[in-house]
Image (tube, rainbow, N blue to C red; front, side, top):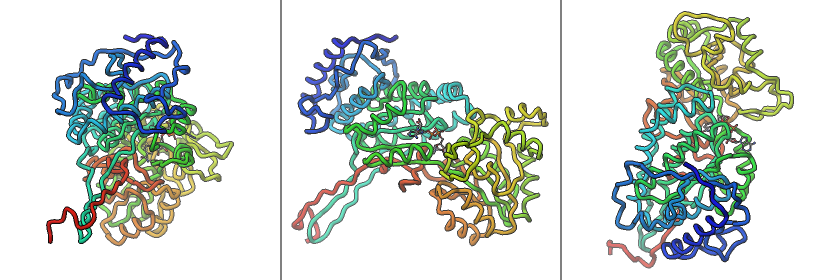
Length: 540
Ligand code: NAD
């Protein structure tokens, strides 16, 4: 059910909220609003028209009956929307309202909710997403039309279960003759986050758990092609939060995201940190903002196979990583450099494990329909090499191998997961971040050539690389040369994000800005608290 709010309704809500917020958390710090230092809640009434509506729905989450911690009382929750029953579950018509609601929610969250409350809220989010993982996968698959439904279920489960919570936070202490100093990990406040179409809802789940664990709230400007599924996951998350006694609107988004709404997010003084997961254009835009930005950009991960590797295992791993979600993942194997002495063996095992070799004619055909000539010489989804002549046709990104085969009128026997082709190192399928289930294979003379070509194809993104080898010196040589955030040895790329490998997961690999595999601590400010003059020391 949805209702339209008039300006009068909104005014009533705001007045009630102002009373509640002042009584619950005291006045907001000076200068927190844009040009409005008198009002606790900087909502600009003149911008709210009758067209602005909020959805209402009963919070039916089974987690509703959880017992809030003593400090938290859901019935006196100071969040505007929660209090009045006008529940948006975080999805707002206007970016200004999404920002303001998220900002207010964080003040409440950090003031009244303890670490154990955060953990209870995160647990509820994990459960909510796990319950809806199949439905979310279906929605994303249907809305975006890319990737694989089954693999999207796995991605949701991975984000829900393997993103660390508050256990990721730690306090450092220095004790000496002069007393005790502690350094704590404090929240930034409201975070503005931008998400990609390739992992839309999964990135939200992963970002939300990390950001909320650190005490932040977050407002999303999602990729427009995924806005309905993202609205669904934001609703699920907010229901889970409220069901666990948490504040409404800790996680918000604008219903119809555009570059203009993103600019408003960037410009808002209420947004203290920007986090972008996407291509190079997005990362550049955020880095130009003048505020702290964490950028997770494009990759084009190479994989090297040398002649000491277990070739059959290498082939199976490569198929697993490169075909997962039709190669949409930024970490996925995008091109192979194989020593000539091992190439035939590798191709044999690839073909035995679900790959289909494109012949010259078929390769040309695929290039004709899946590549578009890059007239403006501008990057689209990968690095900014002005010499590039093509970009990938959006129509073919993330499509099934079988769809390519149908277009080619090829009828292979068995289930084909991945198309492979033999090309030289300059081929556009090697140099472009293609995000299609097509894996180019380049034969090289020796390890040095493999490393040189792999580093070149990675374009300095310093994102992810894989190698299959039993020679430690070879592995070390490549890892040192390519300097990627993730380096996977003798396994599929998926192991690099905790899928079949140790370590926690992330959907936001912040290579360009250096944070790497993001988690709760990434979204914190270090704050030092000093007790001097030998105070608090038990050593005399
Ligand atoms: P994209 O760059 O087209 O879009 C990402 C987000 O940025 C979207 O919300 C989009 O609306 C916005 N955007 C796009 N161009 C922009 C610009 N010039 N200024 C401001 N905002 C802009 O990327 P995509 O197609 O959604 O996702 C695929 C890309 O994301 C690939 O390059 C992939 O490698 C990368 N990616 C990286 C990571 C990582 O963790 N490093 C994770 C997932 C995806």
